[in-house]
Length: 359
Image (cartoon, rainbow, N blue to C red; front, side):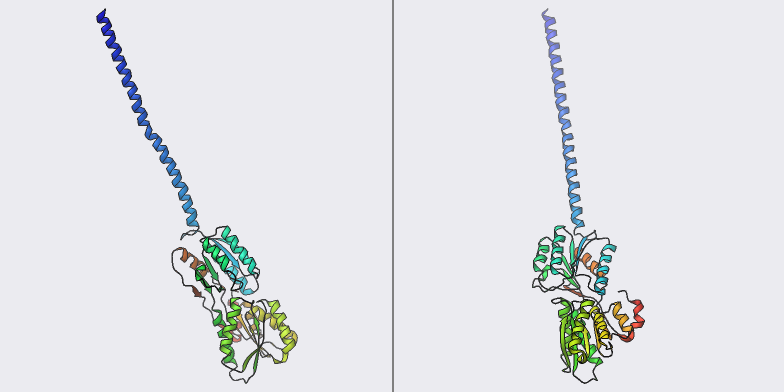
């Protein structure tokens, strides 16, 4: 009986040992399953990596070279043929390069442009392009763009600000040089004529870069000859209608004494031509007509013998502008001022070149 119990006790011990081993095996299996939890952690990490990558993609799309950019463009307005051509050139170039365009027409008002730029900042565009209606008063909003990390590119018109870090570069014409070209043509054209030679001037928008600079360049050149005198100078706001209106006033007060009209753009010159004809004089004969821009309307007027000369201000620099923006995002350091190549055209060239004009 004792042997049986002893054997029975041994069996019980053996069974208990086996159960103990089984329990230990279960513990090991549970331990082996712990890496599965680690796998879950890795998947979460991968999900985070994907989220970061998406964030990086958004950042790349908002500033990295080679990616689609969102570009805000605030234009002065649509006051002339030149401006319309310039707007289309920039809009087309941005879209053809595969970038997204957000456009605003300032309608010749600074407050509209400031509002547009602030809207672009709120929308977190990648770059801002604008042609300032006047030279001053944009520092605050440009600083806001800089603080937001949004680069600004000035097109056609510059700003007068001490801190040139507020913009990347200015692309446009040398307005002072355009004025010089107009003045030099007049001096050469009337070299054999005795004075006095009375000039009336139709200025562009008051405070705008082209109005200030074209006047400065013109006066710099004609100032070397005392026989030239500007007897009247008033803004025509770069529009055809206002150019006609102001020229009518000039003619009313000094009609028989005007020898030359210098208009800061062709549209004002064309409006003035209408006023001169209605007054009973022959434009380009009784009054020498000088314009700036070289728009198609000026070539038509020259071909008709009603305008003497136009100084080119090339508006079709959209592709060049987009290239500069892309260079900036590629890390290229740009010059602060980049000029557009331009020429000058006279009446005897107009008929032949008219069919080739794009604006």
